[in-house]
Image (cartoon, rainbow, N blue to C red):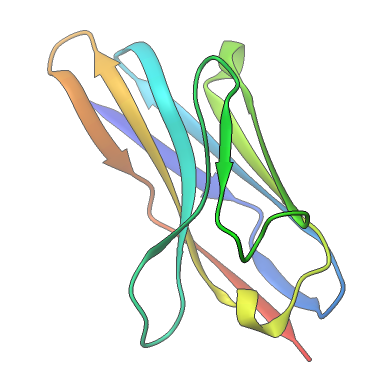
Length: 120
């Protein structure tokens, strides 16, 4: 069994910052891509940012220059630093990881989500 646990969401005023964290745990052999997705009320889930175990990153155009994704491979953790937040960033943020497990092979795992609310 593997799981992802997110933390760091909350309520912030426009222009403020938040830092999300996501820790992977369980029977992990290796982790490939880790990323953050978000789902605003009434909308589909969309990519925010991803990072590979080699450090390559990818960002949605809507967050480029404001969000920074980083990972700590030793701790199986990925972070999302969100600056200059806008009301349109309000969403549930989900962590995702492609994990090779000791028992199940390769699996895609989602966290439970953490709410980010940006007030105007």
